[in-house]
Image: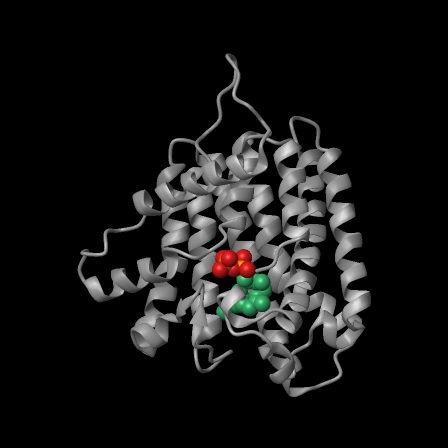
Length: 298
Ligand code: GRG
């Protein structure tokens, strides 16, 4: 397995799916559909949808057993993730000008259009799951429930709420920091893995392992994000660097310092690698993906 070639292949599947499963930009009202596509297109690493596809691929179809196409689930996850980025960038939240190397949606369009484009992507994610998996109602139900739980008030939105509250109350504890990141970041990574497993037909024990993997990978991902925010420049990151510390955000670097943060990222990446290897099947791509995330520079 050549990782760069396989990663390119999976990202290309995602790009094709995004184009296929999003309403054309010309759909009325075109300003809204243009804004949805503007934020989705170009620049995203596509980590979460690739995790959906790669996890489903762990369970190959056989002559006696086929499984559904994982691509609509992958697209739904990227729509949900992109909505959260658009809303996170709004003036009432992070008030950011740069995302995925381009002006944020509210800078490119206007605040109301950005808000509505985020709302529309969020809604589209669930509509796409309902529509695409209608022939397998139990799978449709499980996917919708998984994404709703990960994106809801106890996880993604709850993590975001506590993140905003922490800005107003400096001196976050390690436990508060963990709550924020397990929910703001790890929840969607966990959902991506579990949704890939659901499409592939994973049993309960394997689904539990995928959840553990999501937790480890999510924490590793967020710690590296905090380290990069403190050490890299905006041009490399495609988003404003150094903003978290300035905003008084609860970050791993702020709570633990750079050296301990790097060590923690390494520990969570090692744990993620061990969990992946315990899944069985051909895990070479997922292991290489964890390694590439651990050494990412943006
Ligand atoms: C507004 C409900 C709501 C939630 C916002 C996504 C988010 C929660 C906040 C963005 C800030 C942040 C640091 C979130 C942690 C997750 C994270 C690192 C998101 C960025 O994901 P990448 O790096 O982005 O995978 P790309 O652009 O590559 O998809």
